[in-house]
Length: 561
Image (tube, rainbow, N blue to C red; front, side, top):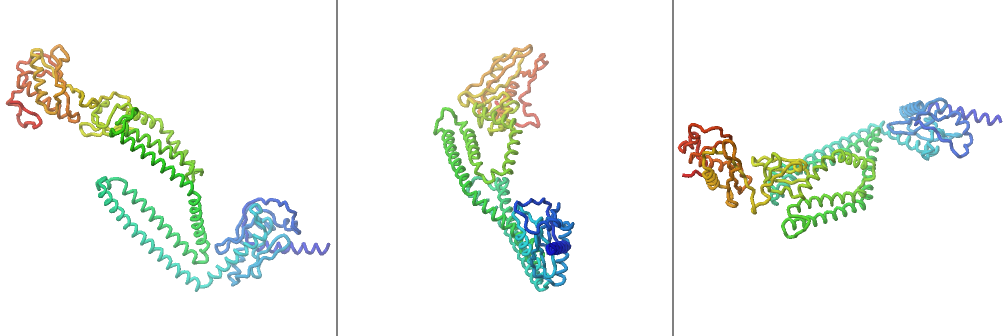
């Protein structure tokens, strides 16, 4: 019994001395009781080493040595780590760089460098949940400490530092030279790409150079090239910095971490790409099938539009919008089919983006769906056609575009007005071009003449004015109707057919000019807008005054006599 007591006292004294000089850091973690029976002597080590609520890592020369999780004889892990670091600094200052050894004692181990103890490891320092063992952690700490001491010894050799500095300067010079070459190549590549694109467009004849330069195609192409050169420059910079950091002992761990990160990232990307090849093949196959079907739809719609094929449920003027609709539906179907095979489609980030886009579409879908459905109604009711001259509300002009969301109309004043399709559907539309050659739309113009003028003479003068006006159709013939007999005058309306509705302003200008000239010539007063009483003298313009200064003859208006 006396011998056992003396052995226990010696063990407690040894652990106490080790705890005073231990450099350890611990992570706050409650130890898990082991299901195995405790080893001999564990009761004593458990009495002096208890789990701590903090963790601390012993770090020397920028390298982590070991992580501690126990409080030994009241010393916290941070205090143990600081003590161990001081011991290592003292050893290196005294020129002691080894040897590193592990000396076990009953229930734990001591980490020693030369004659001094650096740290003590006890069972509470071990993370059993991650599969650590006391021997494994001790051996790993020995390897880390040997590497840190070797690098510390290297840092104390001026020749090694001079050699590392020379190599680092050369590496930095090479890196800067490569970056300069990449920048020069970037500028030259952008210029050559622009010239090549302009030559290709000029040879193809698809568009002129001004249109190409005004588009975003060149800008998009240049941005892609710039992104590729920036990525190349970043790669060269990271490789250069990593190489320089690894030349010096103190910064070598940073360089190794950067290199490991790069290698791990590249390996992960390569592995992910390799795993995604079958799914990407499926996506490409779906895209090729959809593209083939889209081409079939395009050929079919072109045949209907040109009259080579006749379909009972589709007209030539609705062939193009039908093609667009079917193309959109085919691509949407393809996207839905390919979605499960897209890399990352099962990740939370991808799902979050999908939900966000769905929310945006839902919030803005009421107005969007209204415009789209209105566009379908306009297209398939054939209310408007491209090239028709129409009046939609207050807008009058030629239809230049029938879109899914809006309709564009070019007015007679060369203004392009964009009208939402829902607005088009909600108002009356007058089409002046629908009947075409079979029966053109008649355009009215009216004058009011007093009852003292022979109505036959008024009608003859209006018809003669229509006969002298260019731009009016001869079939149907112009005709005059007395549209009202008011209190003081008769309203005469001349109906004519215009050859070109877009030139209606000029044509009506010429017609009105001929009406005034003829009525002045024959002494018939135009009483518009209202006739009240007969003036003392007829209100007509003598022929000699028709071109009073500064007026000049209008070349578009023919003057009789």
